[in-house]
Length: 238
Image (cartoon, rainbow, N blue to C red; front, side):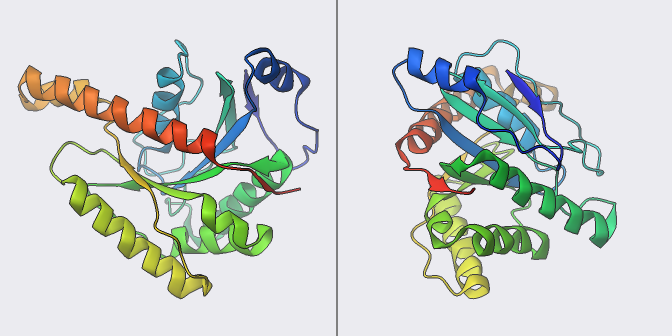
C-alpha cells in the first residue's frame, strides 16, 4: 500500500491497514523517518520495507541536494507503516525548510498515533544542526513529552569506518543537544548503523567478504530496529 499525503488530507486510518494487521494477529505500528536531504531517508525506508518482506518498496531515492520527497510517502508492510518525509536543510533555503517541518508535523498529526520517530543521520558526516533540532522541537512541542521516548537514531551510510561504540557515543551527544534544546531529560537514545546499499562498495574495490559482512550487519540492525518499533507503545498525535 502506498500513500501520498497532502496537507488537506484528514482521513481516518485506512480500513485496509487495520484489516491487514488484524489478519496477521498484530497491532499496526507506525515509524516516521526524519532527516536531512541526502542523508538516506528514502533509502532507509526502502531497506526497512525489504527487511519486512516487501519485494517492491515505494520510496524514490535520489542523491540530489534538493529534497526529492516533496510530500510524505507511506507504505505498510507486515503490520509496520513506514512513513518517509521531506528532507531538511536542502537547497530551498530556510523558508522551504520551515515548510517541510510543518509537513512533517501535519503528517504525524494525521496519523493519529505513532510508535517511533527515526532520526536519520549520515554516519559519514553525523551533524545534528539547527534544522534537525527545530524539527524535533516542533514535533515534541506539538505532541508532548511522550514523543521524546519514541526517538531513535539511525546512522545511514555506515560502511564500517565507525565502531558500534562510536555510534553510541554520538547518539549520546545528540541526546545532549536535544536535552539542551527542549529542556526534557532525554532517555538513552537507541541507535542503529545501516548501510542501505552495501553492494555499491564493490565500486570501491571493497572485498566481497567485507560487503557480505555489511549486508549481514545491516540486516541485523534493521531487525533490531523493527523489533523496537513494534515493542513501543504508541503515542497519540490526533
